[in-house]
Amino acid sequence: MRKILFTALLALTAAAPTLAQTPLTTPSVSQFATISQRVGLTDIAVEYHRPGVNGREVWGALVPYDQVWRAGANQNTTVSFSTPVSVEGKKVPAGKYGVHMIPTEGDWTLILSRESGAWGSFSYDESEDALRVPVKPEAHSATERLTYSFDHPEPASVDLALTWADKRIPIHLEVDLAETLVANAAAELRGLPRFSWQGWNQAAALAVQVGDLEQASTWVDRSIAMNRNFTNIQTKVQILEGQGQPVDELNEESMAIATEAELNAYGYRHLFAGDVDAAIEAFTENSRRHPESWNVWDSLAEAQATKEMKSEAIANYTKAMEMTELEAQKDRIRQTLETLQAD
Image (cartoon, rainbow, N blue to C red; front, side, top):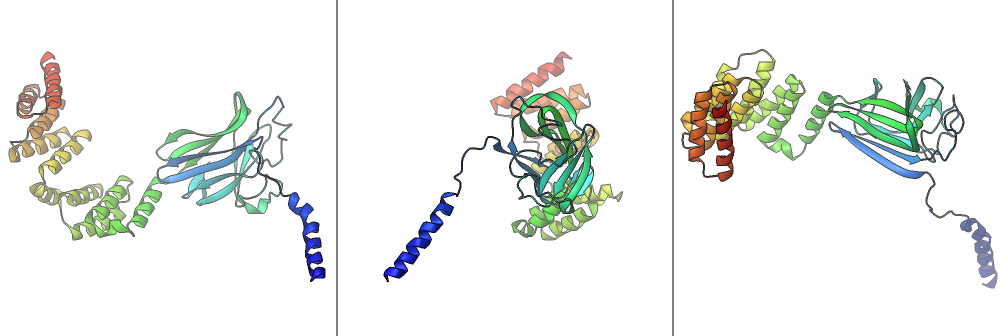
């Protein structure tokens, strides 16, 4: 027994120096940072470490030209995309990538590697490239700490920029809104939204918005089969209009069953689209059906004022102001009348 204990103690003592070499976590000189941006429904995130200039010459010295560089410090700088994106015009699948660059005195090369867990670029392997594209560095005011930023966000694009020392390197990213929105709607229709007419209609309206009329037609037909109503019939009308097909019969059907709120919303859709005559027609019909509602006269007056039918607008604004009991609305309409009467 003593021999066994002695052997175990000897083994533990021998292992102790090895265990003592395990490093503790301490603050990094090049601090860790993350940034993220949503474009459409696509989430883009960058993880990186931020070295400083510290009075050193950076380009061509600290960061040599014509060599693969980690585009940051310490571990791989990484970028992740939740859906496929285009990077400088080249399609890249969804996923997480290691970011590398090759700086030169002219254009640089951006590299996205399928290996995202390496330490810097020391084990970089060209065979693991997912993308190589040229990028153009720009002169920039002095920036002490290396920084990534998302600049110039648009509905379907954004620029990811690396800025450090006296340079800025922009990388243009684009998403296919139609593809991603329709794909997301299809995925969500596998869940609870599939059990209501509203879910199928909302997906159809989204497909109309991005121009996928074939998919929109399939989805709205499913909605109508579940509950035929003003809202999904109007979605069907938009699809058929986009396909150049007749819609008069469907429009008449939807108008016949429209509530006050639905008919009002229909009128405003036309008003905001610039079809003032169609808006006036809808608001007039609403005032015929619901003469007791101050709101229908207010909406009709707004459309008439837009068409410069001043006397009609004044008469209907006055009627709406006299009917409403809401002081805030009275004040708003009174101010509108003063403006119309002063012109």
